[in-house]
Length: 283
Length: 65
Image (tube, rainbow over all chains, first blue to last red):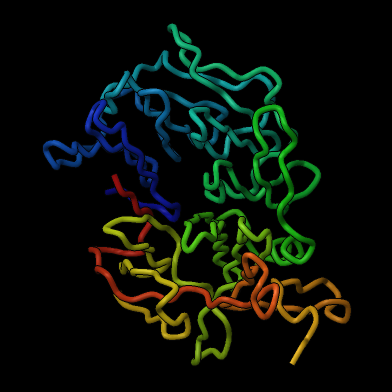
């Protein structure tokens, strides 16, 4: 599978097509759940580079990098793409950073603004929801993560950056959830564009986790408590903090699984495991 | 020992003389329904154990169906 420095994205059309749609390294793939086969999407109309994908109303959606366009697949079929099934944002002029499906709607975060689209049916399929344009975009494409029935992301526009937002619904002003301390830390990160947001819920606490590779700690927002804390490991050789191991997550087999930010290891994460005994494995 | 304001989140401001709190690998949890010995405490952040090693790293996405 083609790779780059960005996360891959995976989404499913469930029993509608028994497919997983994967974006990785600018390319798109379909994993057939019935045949257990992974196939590169060869349709000439599939956009390049494919930055990230999502699933909404039976369609796979894909964001085309370096543009303000996104495209959708044939109904329940990630192998079939039509160059005419494309949307170009006209409410604003900035390029798109992120495309995330939340509540059956498509949140499109640009560099300066954001807007929410929805499936309107017919040949047009997707169209902007009137009044949904927000005057804040995203500073880090993969910081966006949907959890707790909302979208969280690291914001930015032509006035500044590094405020973490919670989408407050269509037509509502996004809610600032970062504190001055968090914003001070993020603003002083040597690089913020490669921040990765992920999240999970355990023991009633719902966490939005923000991994910024150039910062010494991982910042975590406890949505349930409305409080930020940090997570880190101690590098005994360099005598300094390094970010927590995780950079992606899923809940499966009754356990929380997290993927290592630098190695090929997947870990089981649990409150009953002492955090200071966390180990690094893989290579 | 009662230390008012000891339990909280990270809040390291641009001026550490004003506030230099760090909560590292712990997070505050309120005590429900409020009948405990304190209104809030610090719970430990989770740790990890090896689960599986994949072909190549880093791990760039996880998904469950």
